[in-house]
Image 1 (cartoon, each protein chain N blue to C red):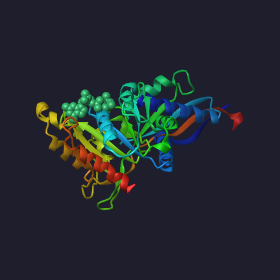
Image 2 (image 1 turned 60 degrees about the vertical axis):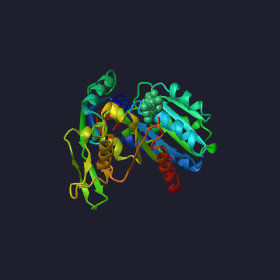
Image 3 (image 1 turned 135 degrees about the vertical axis):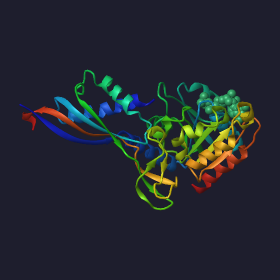
Image 4 (image 1 turned 135 degrees about the horizontal axis):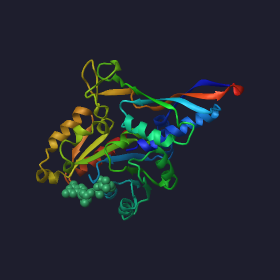
Length: 126
Length: 218
Ligand SMILES: Nc1nc2c(ncn2[C@@H]2O[C@H](COP(=O)(O)OP(=O)(O)OP(=O)(O)O)[C@@H](O)[C@H]2O)c(=O)[nH]1
Ligand SMILES: [Mg+2]
């Protein structure tokens, strides 16, 4: 369970970016979570809500985008989206959809990123 | 007047960890330290295996003992007269590159050939956090049940060496250790999997040889 430390890092990142841009309020936050990370999006959202209390983030809408797994197969050189064994992403084992091989390099799917934020600010600092 | 503005942030928290991990690795390389990340289930024999390796291998060894409360394992390593730093992770379920970076300040790196980093016993969380080590050894044991590998595939995908320990207890707990080996091979076809018992000594020499092999390739 490291959702809490991740959520804290996300909140810190967002508040830092908001401050740098003179935000008065944060309206929306878009977060990308790779399907291969061990993070549970529901738990993460819950913790973000808790940590946001009393900050500029308090009323923001949190959007979590899943990042699909893209692979490069060392066996048949296929590059692109992976098959995942299971719809439950914790158990997703990466397989090459072309040759079925498991000797694959993962290109995407391990992200935990703050992609963008939408902020409200007064016109004067524009 | 107020207006809404969109700000591209593009800050990946995992990337921040990976950057620190690479920094750790540069520090290892500068000091000619070969670093081994030891991860695995709770109580699978990580500390026992590292203790045996300290006694058996002809290298100067150092240890970072990461645990929720690290003093127990750190104390065991200290009895082998090697430099040890204990890292308390508190409520956290894994080590990260930042914690390891701190520990590295307290180790005499120029006097160490091999650094073992024992992670918190956990097959899930350490997957997300690269520490900067040159190889990752996963230690599980038959007593966790022979479906452990199937249930936790991701930790085996990036493993460089897999040890299935406590085979002396396999019959007692009704676990099929060959199934565990095959499950690992399904996930990571090229990885070497060694069955060991640290109680009887079975397979232990193979582990030292395998680590030696990685050091020679380094
Ligand atoms: N029967 C048997 N017992 C073993 C073997 N290896 C380790 N043990 C015992 O298993 C227990 C746990 O071993 P540790 O080395 O502390 O395991 P660990 O993985 O470091 O444990 P944590 O750090 O707490 O996750 C100890 O009582 C060991 O003596 C083995 O091969 N066979
Ligand atoms: Mg231990």
